[in-house]
Image (cartoon, rainbow, N blue to C red; front, side, top):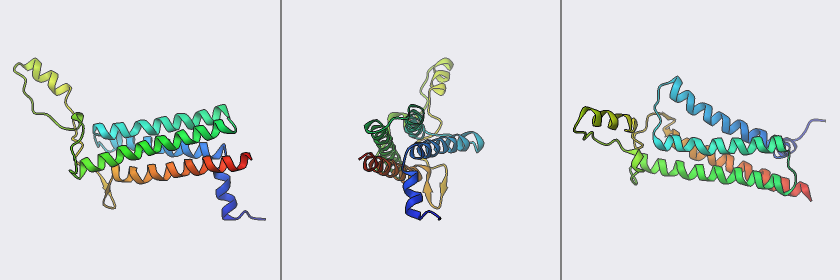
Length: 174
């Protein structure tokens, strides 16, 4: 007898499937960023680099859940941490979107500073420590949305998935 859609969906909310999907989604995001950077030559800004960190953290939490195979409260804590990490990443992406749209200024690492060195060695040092890409410049769009815009949606979806898995695990423990 074939499973209903509800039955299939509920299966992916259970461990180990939930952790495996969170790991795969986080790894895909990191791979996409590196592909855009090294495969297509799009240089990331500081905020782009910061947005990779939560995906790495979520992947590590998911691997921990897969290897450690916790149950009960421990698995809910790991899934909750994954959700929190994705919400943080969504916040970073929202901030980056605001910088891109010139709603507010970015961090000090976001802007390209003019060279002011007096000697060739000063200029060399400044060049080596200068950001290559400004955070307010959109380098790539798809369907009218920048990578930061897509990251808001992607991180929100992953956070909601992790929360759903956390609550589903809670219901199945009782």
